[in-house]
Length: 212
Image 1 (cartoon, helix red, strand yellow):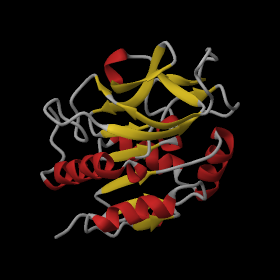
Image 2 (image 1 turned 45 degrees about the horizontal axis):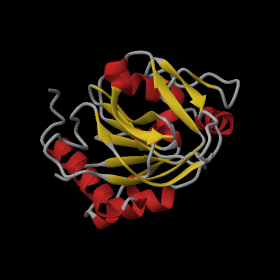
Image 3 (image 1 turned 180 degrees about the horizontal axis):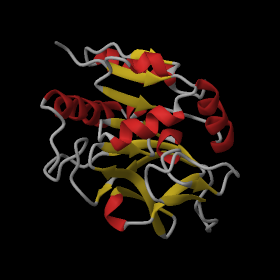
């Protein structure tokens, strides 16, 4: 049997482009708009473009938040994209509502620096900090596409799987914790690099999502 991917639809942003990216890799994700839609899913994708509080409010309205927490507690695969990464954290400087809290840490506004424009928009190379199911140490240098004004700051440094330069410092580009992972950039808009990472993640799922 093929993988049954669930694409969480809570009315925020890049759902169609993410769906098309998986279509090009031979997969047709099912839209998840309520808890009953989770039945039979092997892995979930949490996309998102927009602001933190409206996203949390929209997720609350679907009734999915308790199920997403149980999904994570059961160590089942979930991939966040862009705002979907930020929602995994405990809170954001962009809003007042609590995040999902699946990863300890907070989301902060990008620092204002000379020569560094906010939002951080465009292509940048990834600095791999830890091999993960989307990107391995032997993979070619990955240039990916970013659009964001806030970035996650994990409480535990080992949670950061990749970073990207911003001004004189770096920001979190990927996080990974067992079978829970996310990317701040848009793999669905990152040409061959993004396609390769999504394909690698799908292969990892098909092998049973091994840890380590």
